Image (cartoon, rainbow, N blue to C red; front, top):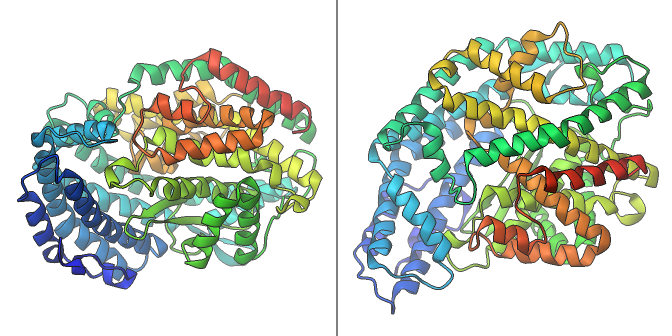
Amino acid sequence: MDNPRVLPEKATEMLEWSWAQFEPYYVELAGRKLSAANVEAFLADWTRLHERLDEVATRLGIAKDANTADKEAEQRFNTYLEEIYPKSQEAEQKLKMLLLDSKLVPAGFELPLKKMQTDAALFREANLPLQVESSKLGTEYAKVIGGQTVQWDGKEVTVTQLRPVFQETNRDRREQAWRLSAKRQLADRATLNELWQKLLALRLQMATNAGFADYRSLVWKEMFRFDYTPENCKQFHRAIEETVVPAAARTYQRKAGLLGIPALRPWDLDVDAEGRPALAPFKEVEQFKSGVHTILQRVDPQLGGYFQTMMAEQLLDLENRNNKAPGGYCSTLEAAKRPFIFMNAVGMHGDVMTLIHESGHACHSFEASRLPYFQQRNSGLEFAEVASMGMELLAAPYFAKDAGGFYTRDEAARAFAENLEKNIQFWPYMAVVDGFQHWVYENPQAAMEPANCDKQWTVLWRRFMAGVDWSGLDDVLETGWQRKLHIFLVPFYYVEYGLAQLGAAQVWANALRDQAGAVAAYRRALALGGTKSLPELYAAAGAKFAFDSATLGPVVALMEEKLAAGA
């Protein structure tokens, strides 16, 4: 590509680009005759072009999420979806077929080529408008959730901004805040049910268009799940039921005992069991950034340096505000070779954990960006989450102020104990979410009726979530699936968290014996990007990719041992 004008460097330029400015370069690439002598130059040029186009989409998405009430940002994003995305997918498909038809296998491209073959086989032009519509419905979901506000202590706050109240020692205030949040969320029940029916119908049609009998079979291939099956997921659910559910129940029972109550209620889950005030790691965002930077610097100077770059280049949007989209994520600005972190901080310890989690993704992005071609850089999500969850555990020794973090030594031990408890409690919740999604796509006609979804969510909740008393709160419990954005926006993306937590816990176990060695292995695995299989990536990080009780049990036992010792 002789003219670099197609490669805008400024963010403001990227928000204004149209397909007409990208198309000539795709046409030129598609017209090349590939050989062993020029295939690397072809891949380099394709990468350069793809990076810019991908960054346009990422920046438009970030702008939309930053303010869901910004009609101009929403329109720019929708214009991209309608006018650029379908054409770019068609153009990318031509380049994939050109490379596949050449039968060339560039060095280090074996697994990316397998993914490309899968992608090319799944491509259906008829699905492009359905994918566009699905993305728009996802925006509607974010607007509904982001617009949920209540009156509290005389002012309007988002439901997210009520979260710190759940850590207050005044139980009556916690219950009042929890019920207020639940009431506001239930007010959108009908709206979310309608959105769900539209999204599910689109997914079923996409599966039919691609020649699959069910949506799960389509998404399994779309997500490149070459290394495990739906039955492996169910095996994992059973292992969790056997080894983790009893351990999670013990954490809840222990807390109820310390609080002096018969059983925990939903508004008791976040308060400190010993009546201590909630951990308050920071008041200002700059203090938040600085503390996390220091922690990462202690984990590894290079990892800390990556975060310093993000601070310097304003690649962090951290604080919660009205009309900000929910959740948190790390996206990569491919052309700039920089990650961007988006989250909703309100001054809680959970915010520290979220930023450290997303910083793990950011470090993964930095490490993998050295690979020459974009197709090599993205690992499976099952390992991408090892990067983030592994960082949470590797960072734990540095939470105390005298180690560079936010807390006294006692507070740091408390914070880590809370993290271990949440890890144990997470696996059963993950099994609920993943089990629910398997049920939906095994029973799509039943799932089209939201009342059936309510019932199935409740069945799974009763199976896995032992230890908390939800009596009298059936309407809130049964609609829990509506408040899990993955179910609406990224179907089947959740078991990855459970598998990755098992991998990350193994990395942590290694770090207890040799912190420096575990961090070095972790970084080596991140640098492999998507060039190796999941079992190989886990092995590189010093872990085993597994679904069984024999692997999960010892990890849970180690966590319980550390909790018993005061973490």
